[in-house]
Length: 384
Ligand SMILES: Nc1ncnc2c1ncn2[C@@H]1O[C@H](COP(=O)(O)OP(=O)(O)OP(=O)(O)O)[C@@H](O)[C@H]1O
Ligand SMILES: [Mg+2]
Image (cartoon, rainbow, N blue to C red; front, side, top):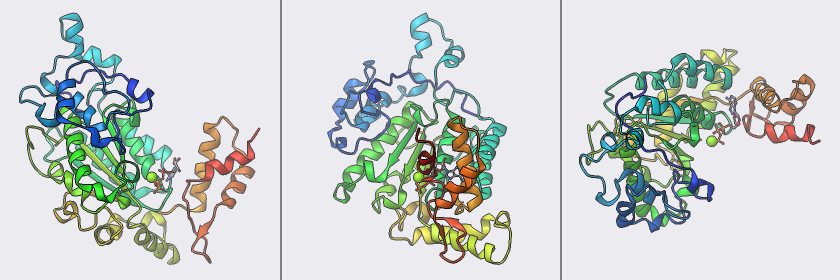
C-alpha cells in the first residue's frame, strides 16, 4: 500500500528538464557548483533551479535539506499544500487525482505489478518472484524499519533497467520521469575517481534533499560495477535501521542498484542446469544467492567491492537475472513488432533472432547481448 499520509510536495514544472537540464539527475559536470546558500535561498521561492544548475542545488531548493535549509517542522508533511494555498481549503486527495503527489498517486496493486512482470519480463522467474514479494511487501508495511534495497545483477540486456522501470511505473504514474524517481548512472554522474570525496558529499545532500521532500522517493543506481569503490558507502547511513538521520526518515525510500557484477556466476549456475537437462525454472534463489553476494562483494570491478552495505547486510535482496535464450530473444522481437504496429511475422522474428550471437561457442545457448540489440536489427527489415 502506498503512503497515504499527509506528505505532499508542491507540483514542479518540467521546465528545467526541457531546457536540457534534468532536475532529478545529478549533473556530473556542474555538480561542484552547489552551495548551501543557493539551496537555502531558493527554497520556497517557487522557482525551479535553472538550466545548468547542479542536481544537489535543486535538492536544496525543493527539499530544503541542503546546508541546513531543512528545519525541524518544515518537512514535507508541514509544507502548505497547493490545494490549500489556492482555495483556502484542503483537498489533498482531490488534488492528487489531477497531479502526481509523493507516495500518493495510487496504492500499489500487487496484481497489476504481477501482470506487468508476467507480460513484459521474459525468462526471469527468480527476479519476478523476488521483486513482486519485496516491493508489494515493503509498500504494504506502514512502518518499515529500513528503506527497501534491491540489488539487481545479471548479464547485459537481461531486463534490469526494464524491471526498474516497471517498479517505478507501478508506484508513480510518471514512472522513470516522475519527480520522485531518481536515476544515477555511475559513468555519467560520477565519472572522475579523483572527485570521489566531492561526489560523496553531493550524493548525500541530493538524497537527503529528495527524501525530505518525499519520503517515498525511489533512487536507481545504474552501472554499479563502474561506481568508484567507496562512493556507495556514502549512503550507508540512509540504508540502515535508523528511525531518522539528521531529522529525515529514510525508511520509506526505495534504493535499486543495477550491475553486471556476478553475471558470470549466474551464467555458470544456469548453464550447469541446462547441461544436466534440468528446467531453467527449477533454478531456485538459494542456488544463486550466496554465491552471488560473495562474488559481488569480492569483485574489484564492483562498486560494492568491500562495501559496508554488504558487510552490514544492508542489501535486502540480491536479485539474479538469468542469461536469455533464443526463445526469449524471439519474445522480445515480437513485443517490439507489436509496439511498432506491425503484424508479427514469424519469419522475420526467426531471422532477427538468428542474427544475434549466442554463447558458449559450442552450445550456443544464451544471447550475448540479451535482448539489447534486437530492436536495431529489426530496423533493417522495416526501413521504409
Ligand atoms: N527479460 C526480458 N524480458 C523482456 N524484455 C527484455 C528482457 N531483457 C531485456 N529486455 C529488453 O531489452 C532491452 C534492454 O534491456 P535492459 O536495458 O533492461 O537490460 P539490462 O539488464 O539493464 O542490460 P545492461 O546490463 O547492459 O544495462 C530493453 O528494451 C528491454 O525491454
Ligand atoms: Mg541496464
